[in-house]
Length: 260
Image: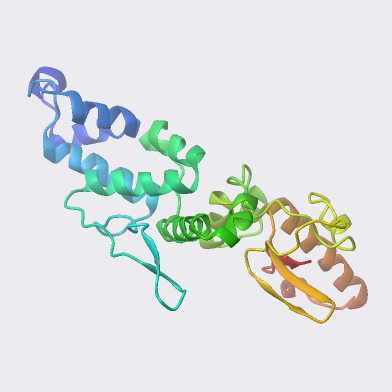
């Protein structure tokens, strides 16, 4: 250590290490054999604790959801117990793998960005989307739903400007709704999704629905752009109908789902 970092104390060395991308730190951890060139184990633990807390928002040492979704006898999905981790390095690897199963793009960003300026994702949403996607892939009748899920939203600034909670923003930052047609009367309001045509599959909405006589209802998880457009459209309609309505009534409202 002294040969590289001189007389710096461990805290100062850790601050320097935190400018490394996680991919570089992992490479150092896996390939460094000479103690003179390899940071001490405790320092690397400090680095991975910093990264894991920063990127995944953890407040304690824990691994990601095991991701093993099983179907019980009653047909409902159950989740296997999470794997035990004994170090922050293992925790980082666990959550990074889980993130990759939800969004390969986000996983690459988490691995190769500078640790000092990395974006963050909610571990709760990572675990939730991982369970949802894993279960959908394993159900023959739900593959259409899985295939309709879009990749992460590229721009969530609209939600951030509206003061949306991070727990809301992080949902779209991992999965940007569904790529499905909507009711022909609604599609023009949304502008970013096509209208439902004769012969199109209507039953792939993530939030489910029902069929009653000649009514077929299924609720789609809207992409962020579509959610923004339909929210603004309905807000304008309500303001026209209720001119004296206070601005605060609609300030924190967001349409996130729409039925066929």
